[in-house]
Image (tube, rainbow, N blue to C red; front, side, top):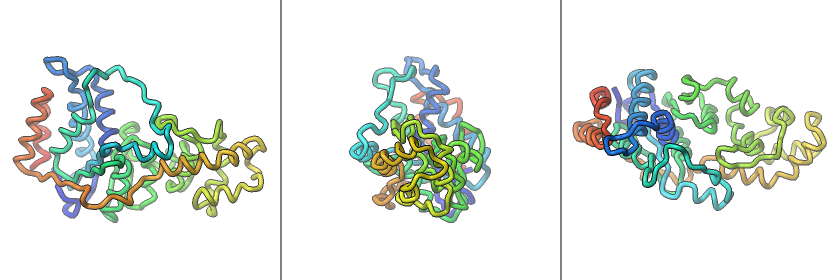
Length: 302
C-alpha cells in the first residue's frame, strides 16, 4: 500500500506528527490499557492514518515530520511568549507524554522520517515540500499556517478538521489574502492565539485586506512602505496602531516563517517496508493493547 521512497511513489503525503498525535489523544482520551495507561494516542494515530491513506489513493510515500529536541527554544529567544500559553488538558496524567508514545508508533511505519534538533515539525514539513518537488504532494495537517505551502502548484493540504482538501475560499475567509504565500504576513499582523503571538491589537482585517492583496505588497517591508501615508481603507486610529506595532509584527514574522536553512539529508531517516519493521509495529501495538488494528495496519508493509 505504501512506498518507502518518494522516487517510487505517485503521491507524497507529508504528515504533521504533532498535530496528528494531539488530535488522536483528544478524540480517544478515554482509551486506556488494562493497567490504566493512556492508549488513545496510539489507536487514534493508526486509525486516522489508515483512513487518510485509503482516501488519498494508491502509490503513496509518507514523510513523517517530528518536532526536534528543544524545538521551540530558538523561536522563544526571538519571542519569549511564543507558545507560552499552554494549559493542562483533561487527558494529561503524570508521566504521560503522547508525543513520545506517538513517535514509538510512527517511526515503525514505511517512509521517510525528518527530525532536527532545535527545529519544529513545521520547519521539517516546509523543507520536505522543497525536497520532493515537483511530485504531487499532500500535507496532512490541521495547522492553518501550512496552507501557505499551497503557493506551489504541486502541493495540496488535507485538513482533518474539515475532512477535505483546503480550498482558496478557506484562506480568503481566515486570512483575507488571495495568494497563499501571503498567509505568513497576514498572521504576523493578525496574531495567533494558539501560538500566543499577539498581532496588531484589535486589527480589523478588512482594513488591511486591500494592501495585503496589492501586487506591490511582496513582503512586510513593502506593506509598511505602502501605509506610510494613511490608506483609504484604514481609519486613522487603526493606521496609527498598525504603524506603532511594526517592530512587533516583524518579530512575529520571524517566528512564523519556517526555518529550513539548517535542514539537510542528515535529518532524514528511512523506514523500510519489511518484516522487521512490521514486527516493531506489532510490538508497539501490543504495548498499548491496540493489537485489534494490526491486521489492517500490516497491509502498509505489503
